[in-house]
Each structure stands twice: as structure tokens, then as C-alpha cells.
Length: 268
Ligand code: ATP
Image 1: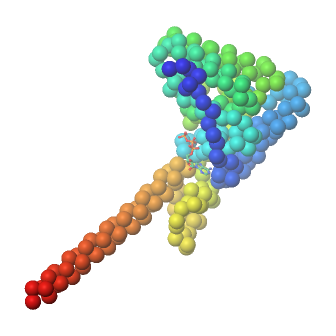
Image 2 (image 1 turned 135 degrees about the vertical axis):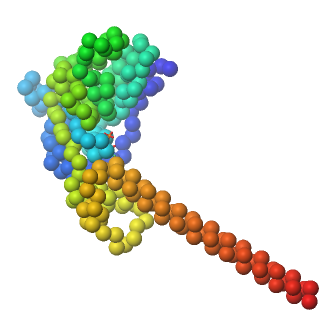
């Protein structure tokens, strides 16, 4: 497989309106990431005002890190490459290096561009003496490609990583990600809003009490709420399907009993 065929930009169809709560975080991202992209000439003027080429989103799983990364790209009108780290950590040594080079060269071609790396700590974790030689070389290569972006003031490619284990990230990587944001578990009001967003295009009862649901789902992440709604939707459709089958069965029985009585009439 040719490395460049594995790396394709993704069409994004989410924006800030799809994110419940997190207004403070959205504002920070506007100021730190989007403004420097939109007003590049002002920021690129001085070495001190260089926009960040690395952004880290950290927090518990399922709380919207991927959603935020995609919405940032959409709002800033940037291309979005979702880099699957398992490709970079794959055993076929040699190809991984080509792949990393392909990612960076595509991102530069498409700039402004966000390269999103979910679970970034899984391949850029703290280096140890036990690192496989190929892994160590891949990390070094990745960092030197990244440095190429950092030293070019006109470049508008951002590496945006997500992790729920920021403490496992290599120090050298942490330094390359000066803009770091925490994406926390949602509170009751945010859960209420997430449920409203998930169910906005779904057929629901008119009197659904979102505030009560938000309060009753303490400890649920956004993806837990998504799963909860999915299960409720499946139960609803199953009930409908069961009712419909029962109706069809009843119809069949009515028909056969009426044709039985027709037969009796003919016999008579
Ligand atoms: P992971 O760490 O497991 O990769 P994540 O933090 O990247 O998870 P997402 O994949 O962005 O989480 O979120 C999962 C789903 O949860 C989303 O598709 C969305 O339905 C819902 N969700 C999470 N947070 C929010 C939020 N703040 N607003 C609206 N929906 C949310």
C-alpha cells in the first residue's frame, strides 16, 4: 500500500453549535488557534507571537475532544487529517517513516490544516531504554518533521493531539504543544444540553424532561449519553416493530377465521 493512500483529509460537518457547554474552552481555542490562522500576517510578524503548532486536548474519554478538534477545523476553515496512530506504530518498519513524511507533506499542501492524533501518548510516550529501535527512530523522525513546521513562520499546520493520559507524553512532545486544554467530564447542565443535541433530530416525546435527565445521569460522559440515547431509540423501534408484527398476526388470524366461516357458508 502506498503511504499517501492511507492519509486522506476528512470532510467535517460539525461546528461550535454541535458542542454543548465548554464555552470557555471554545473561546480559548478561538483566541489561540483560530485568530492566528485568520490573521496570520499579524501573528507571523514576530517570533514572540508565533501561533502554536501543537495543541493538546486532554481529559477523560468520551467528553468531546475529537468533536472539538473537528469543530475547530470547520470554524477556522482548515483542512482536517485524522491520523490513525496504529498505522504509525505498525510493525512494517520503513513504511511508517514514509507514512509520517506523507502526512506532513499532505498537511503542508492543504494548509491551513489540523493533523489530529487521538491517543497521541500511545506513540509519543516517554522514551525508555526498552523502546524498539524502529519506534525510537519513528519518534525522532516525527519530531523533526514537526520542528520543520515550528521553524517556518508562514506555515499554518497544527498538530492537535488528544489524550486521557497526558502524564505519559514525552516531555519533548509536551514542549511542542504549548497550547494545552483540559476537556472535563460534563456537569448536569452540560449533560442536559448534550442530550438535547443528540436527540434534536430524533422522534421524542413532546414532554421529555431534559433537566431531570441531565441531573439523573451523574458520572456519564458525552459518549455514555450517546449510548444511552442509542439504546432508548432501539427500544422504541423494537416496541414499534413488535406491535406491528402483533397487528399483522392478528390480521392474518382474522382473515383465516373469516375464510373458515366463508367455507362453512359454502358447505351449507
Ligand atoms: P475518546 O477519548 O474516547 O477518543 P473524545 O473525548 O474524543 O473520546 P468524542 O469522540 O469527541 O470524545 O465524543 C464522543 C461523543 O460524545 C460525541 O460524538 C458526541 O455525541 C458526544 N459528546 C461528547 N462531548 C460532547 C459535548 N461537549 N457536546 C456535545 N456532544 C458531546
